[in-house]
Amino acid sequence: MIVLKVLTEGLLLGFFLYVICALGIRNGATGMIHLYGKDVQNRAVELGLTTHEKIRKRNTLFKIFCLAGYIIYVLCAVYVVNRARGFLQGFIQLFIILMIMNVIDRLLIDEYWVNHTDAWNIPGTEDLKPYIKSDEKKKKWIFETIGFALVSVILAAFMALILN
Image 1 (tube, rainbow, N blue to C red):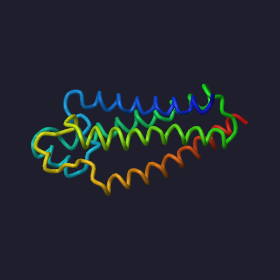
Image 2 (tube, rainbow, N blue to C red):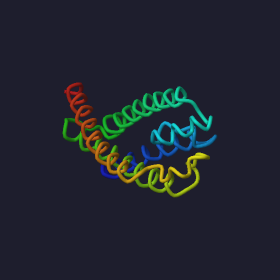
Image 3 (cartoon, rainbow, N blue to C red):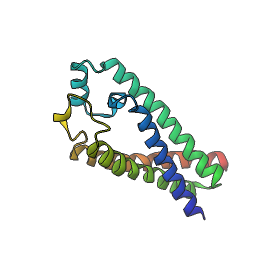
């Protein structure tokens, strides 16, 4: 039963990320240009599609709301809904939920949606495609796997201290 809950919670978190991205590009892909490489960002600024200030502001807001939202969501899922207790139980559930979202982000959003559909095209930057290069993909997999493991350790340790 708990395995099904954790899998469902990971899928829901991935769906929330999808919705955030869909809302971000609803008026065009420049709405999420802060997620693109510097070459695409600079070209979009040169073309007058956005400014560096708007990119910086969107990036900051995205990080604040997404990170806070992810943390609140996983903590509620693991410690309120699933009633995890202790470090190990919390860590495993947190890490699995975050990694499911990571797989959805890497494969469905980055690989398919961004690189194989026109939804994320920014006019005048098509020559810079694919927007997510293979070396960036590798870095994202490594960074987020290690990063989510560390976040899971920190959150599980913090919650173990609070709950014990």
